[in-house]
Length: 303
Length: 246
Image 1: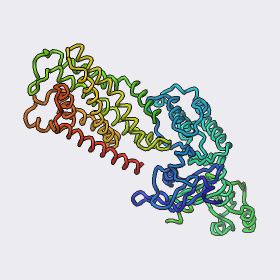
Image 2 (image 1 turned 90 degrees about the vertical axis):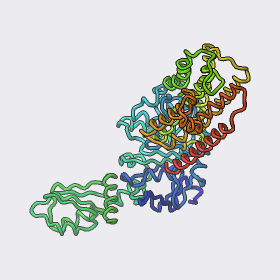
Image 3 (image 1 turned 90 degrees about the horizontal axis):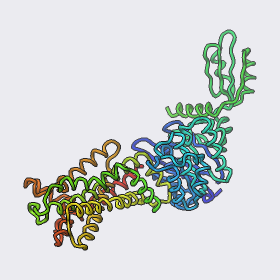
Image 4 (image 1 turned 30 degrees about the vertical axis):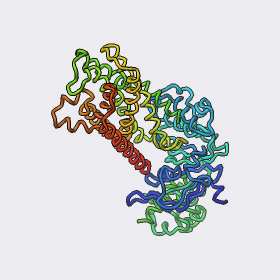
């Protein structure tokens, strides 16, 4: 995998605001056709990362390359379509007029009517942009990002303000984009979206990359499974804490919840302690819990 | 970029309030001020009649309104709202946004100049040679670029709630003190000394020189040129600062 084959290449990129390091020595490499989710708590540096990627901000150090060129050159070549989180729209013009503008400005543009119907906004084409609901405005932004045949689509929190049905319809549209061989990078708060849609998940925390892998790998990294049970009689806390493969434990009253990287071995050892667990449950960890586990572990380390 | 100019223009023409204040209002104001003046009395300190004098003042005022009022507030809002950022993700060159705004304002300012002339000629019998009409239109239209640059600078300087009052103060201050609403010769001496250094005063003086078929004063041309360099330079500097920060 050479650098020129990368769609996006960050090399030791840093960006600070005053004393805060928003992005801290970030290196990453996106390959053609990947659908990548960028996860992170608020203030993790997601938006700054996307701004750097799109050339809206310049890094303090390190380099950002898109398709082997500068972000601006890639945009001018029509290879990038982007939807910003609170990307303002032009007021007092209609949806159709705005989409036509986006098509006019894209070197490899589609027909405006196609763009409108693909984004699901054909029926509101004549409405004024400033009269739209939050979800409708998001679809207009999506239309602007997909006005032409771009190779890379960037979406910053694309489903904010959408209800569940619209969100599902939106991701169906998005999948079509990915199925056509485009690289898609999206930042999101909704972990189930990352779990269901991305083939690669990047976890960002304090401007650094904490994890990079498939959703399954991220879950494994956090301690893949959750074991919970009730204890009869007294709870021998030190013994429980000493169980093998344990990555986290929470004891409340007689109920014990354990996170384990090898649940089978942990449960086996539990019986070895002479404890008889009641209501034993072993379940996979959701991406959300994995995410919380990874970021809190990092938080604890940095303190 | 032409498509953005077209869309900016569509939007400006759709905004009735803006059209009223930049296109109709100066003519109305002209009729109110010059309406009762007889067509022979000369403006003190000038050999022009009041209607002839005020025609240039109001045409200049209309052009000033068209290029200053719409843009500064829009730019400030669109900068904050993120539309400017969104445009930076298109092939549109960086300056394209500002140029499109200026170009569309220039299209609106032309009718506001011509309508004042038409009203003055029809209602108050203002008569000039053909070359004078053409030269007046050209000079006032071209001169409005100075204030278009000021509008852009204000749009990048102020933000949020501050932009409207700042624009208003600048707009009314320049209009009144520059003598667009009444001849500066009616001002007390000390105020006249200030007024003659204002770009709006120089702007109207340019038109009045054409009406008197004489060459404009070097001082007026210098004031306009220096103002343009200051405003355009300030706009460019603020634009660059904003781009790095955004």
